[in-house]
Image 1: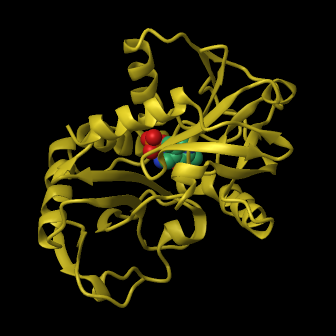
Image 2: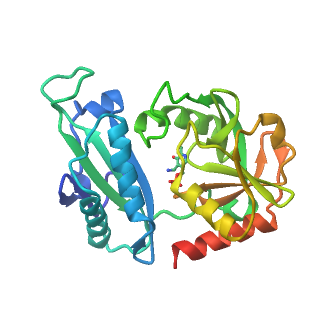
Length: 285
Ligand code: PMP
């Protein structure tokens, strides 16, 4: 993905796509001192740009890292790089990270905190699962306790087990994996939050040890506006079999129906379709 035309915003300026490089001794490469965002731009407008910029800064603070840009500057940088690449509908990846410093130890107080933003066209994250329903594996990796890692940050280090879970799922012909948390409750997928439906009501894991996605919060708000009861609670694995519908939410995933998780089957039902349609309308409004 590094050899193509286009521009990437790095540390305050636009650089040619091929020149957007970092040094081998970048602290983040060795110690995962990086926080990032995934966003989408629809019809030339970034969906919830300010919320994403705020989350980036907050994630940085959770890693003891002050990002040297304001929300307004980050919003403007995202708009600038989208324009430079001539895009109207795209995915946006901003990443703040600790660069190379005087020494190469764990401490990085003297290292610069850098910011880069790339944008590219990205269609449906789960391909045709968007209509048929995705097939999910069940990961052997558990979302860690908030006492183990700052689990509410969108931080690079939290994704190591996600990549491993996703690779294991793909080897079994699945699109993704559902992960349990350190206590054994249902948590989320490797890059998306999860919702279930039963008897006309919605159940979703309480976001107390994983990313409380911006799409998750948007969808909960939409459901409440539709007068549908939403239970944010701890969900046990043995309950999953009894749910009728299931979907994933995320910036990249948007609202993607789930057809299978391990041995369990779900229908791509009316509510799932309605939520997916309403979300699509909202982001393009
Ligand atoms: N959980 C994880 C692990 C994710 O990577 C993402 C994608 N950012 C989400 C949930 C969904 O978050 P959002 O809706 O803010 O994109």
